[in-house]
Amino acid sequence: MNQPRPKIPPKHCCSEVIPENSARSFSGPAALVKKALRDKLIPRGSSVLEVGAGCLRNSNFLQRKGYRVSVIELEAVARRYRREYSRFLEIGGKLLSSWPPPQSFDVVVSTFTLETICMKGERNEHLNRLVQSVRTGGHILIGVRGPKDVKTSVGKGRKCGDGYITPLKTFIKPFTVGEISNQLEIRGTRITKLYGGARQNAPKIIEIVAKKT
Image 1 (cartoon, rainbow, N blue to C red):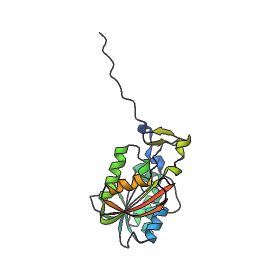
Image 2 (image 1 turned 90 degrees about the vertical axis):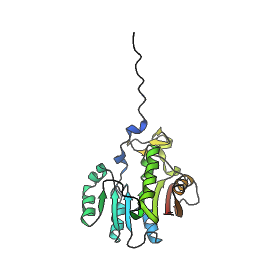
Image 3 (image 1 turned 135 degrees about the vertical axis):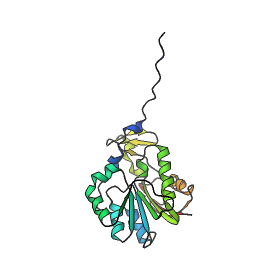
Image 4 (image 1 turned 180 degrees about the horizontal axis):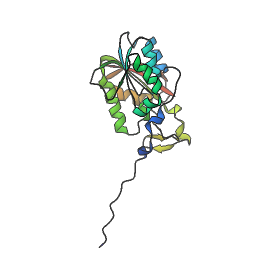
């Protein structure tokens, strides 16, 4: 008697994503970091953690301003920008191999990283860790892409979960202002500044500064 073949669950589309492909080269820091510095939301002497540092555009900028900066990044991305990371480390920067203990930093920065994480559970964990890493009273700077900036929905990408897989095998999930604000507030933070599309719920770029309460 023939035994029925076991059913093999279909491979999730997230398995196609190559996370390091999301890293890009930039010549200057994200606008959010410059605005937060201008508005004194990154006090002098602060210890700063950047998660998803990419080519180190934000970390290098803050390091030149005199801040103590540590970063978390994928090994493949750090290898791609080996020269930049070597210089960063030589002048006192730190590359962490894992998340730090809770309340280790005064400021945590994450620009255009959250929306590249394909699995919703991993995005939630990413947000949890960001909030846990900053000290009470410290600030979290988050930049994400909004619906008007995500072009994959008009034929340049393929639907996957609540976002899209791009031709470069990266993932992108657009956020609304209400969605990202709510996610931060339920984790014990209070929105301090909302830059970018502050008057729209679905802008091109969302730039938020939240204070841990």
